[in-house]
Image (cartoon, rainbow, N blue to C red; front, side, top):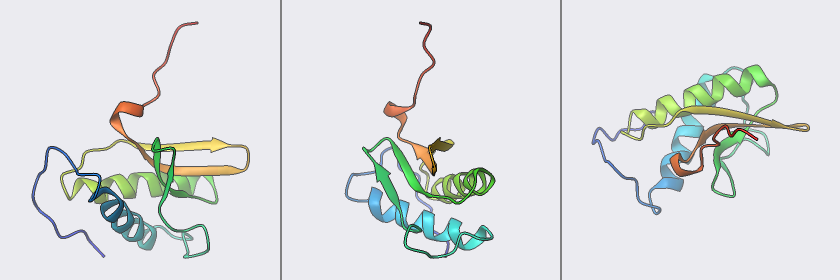
Length: 106
């Protein structure tokens, strides 16, 4: 399923974001081999920082993150792919622009 909107919004409303992300995750999951529709295959938002879904491996996470952001790009929503591995959890998708982690000198 491809996102059909060709408009180029500068902002995405909070009301549209869940629907847009769900469609992007569904379309990306259909294209990535092994990203089946198990219990953890739906869209995921953790504290509104990393938006996407869980993956089974780092390689699959990288592929899914790239596919999700590519699908979002078709609707005019620009995002950079991101993969986060914490313990056994691998989460992939994108960070909201104001929440992108910045490198800091300590």
